[in-house]
Length: 271
Length: 185
Ligand SMILES: Cc1cc2nc3c(=O)[nH]c(=O)nc-3n(C[C@H](O)[C@H](O)[C@H](O)COP(=O)(O)OP(=O)(O)OC[C@H]3O[C@@H](n4cnc5c(N)ncnc54)[C@H](O)[C@@H]3O)c2cc1C
Ligand code: FES
Ligand code: FES
Image (cartoon, rainbow over all chains, first blue to last red):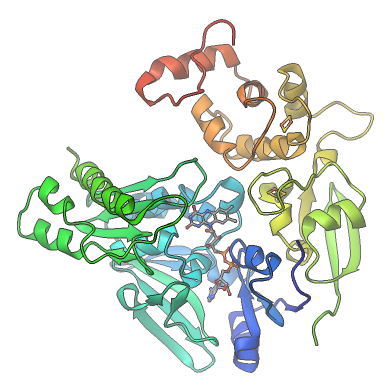
């Protein structure tokens, strides 16, 4: 399968990439790791006129502590999250989640910025960043803005990101020793999640339980009021809208959300 | 406006290659058609099977899902590059032969390249590490058993001893199909 022909630019700086985006807008598409975009283009579900390759911008590739947060450049690959010593102590949820994405070859290419931008509700990292209460930093030739992840997604494959904007950074709080767990349910080891649940510091993020990553708000509220893990987890599918497909029915996904939430909360509590 | 070509310079198996290519040219096609190296197979063409796995700057990638332009100025290694002609077989290739880690051989180039990358990142893998590390590569012939043994052997381990240790260490986690160690298959 071969993509429709396109023009290719590989700018040397973030500013040059933003200038190209400002000029070409909706006719252009950014290429990071290419592990969502290239399959889409090979299937000809997408056919951008111009591909702007940001895959080598060193300015987008870092993981560093800044005050109470860890700042992660959008070009950081899943493999780099997995192997990061900073994250292992400051935000241990993220390496553990990154390790479950696809297979090693996918993790050598795919990036956190690409995962967040692609906005697939079955993706792992968006729900993890949601459970972390992270922030997405967007930049365009017009300026920079910070969007809390809680307000970033608007639907399946869609977010508040404008066509001329680049995700340049993801910021997450340092959770350190706070309890965390990731429970991902798949049929085969390198599959996408049928459902997955990220827990950190009493917050619960759900993968594939609606058009966007979701928080299990009823569960979080019950926990805050002192409910048992068992009782709180029983509320995990409230206000969700899971899809039905060949992998699972809606009701089965609801069951998984409750069960995996119970398991994740139990692990996070260290019991 | 679309369809301009781009000049790429890619080091393949230590040798400089260059060509004017369409940006949409996949690395797998560049290697097979432009450079003429046919060990890299295309199986699924959908990032699923791993048959097209090669190394880019030493790390495994699926070359059906990488554009040739993305490897401009980079170093690519294919199966051919592991064992120079007339020289010794690469230890991983040798281990696949000695442990009978292949039957039809279609998955083998990708399997070997994925295994080389795996050992590079984790020089002392357990049996579980090997099985999980090869999750991106499908083999329709071998049942994986001898492939896993080959990778353990190439990492300098005794496959019998490691499989026994793995089986005894945490039997409750041992998935169906995992070796129970000891004698026989
Ligand atoms: C076989 C396979 C299995 C996979 N399994 C999983 C899985 O289990 N879990 C999971 O979560 N994901 C999985 N993925 C997806 C993988 O994680 C992708 O790498 C990721 O979703 C996209 O990241 P990328 O860097 O490859 O983005 P690209 O494919 O390069 O881009 C994806 C989209 O995001 C846009 N984009 C990229 N970077 C930016 C940026 N910085 N700013 C603005 N827009 C940007 C692009 O324009 C494009 O629209 C899998 C992929 C494959 C091929
Ligand atoms: S041909 Fe590339 S993964 Fe199957
Ligand atoms: S040996 Fe035939 S597919 Fe693996």
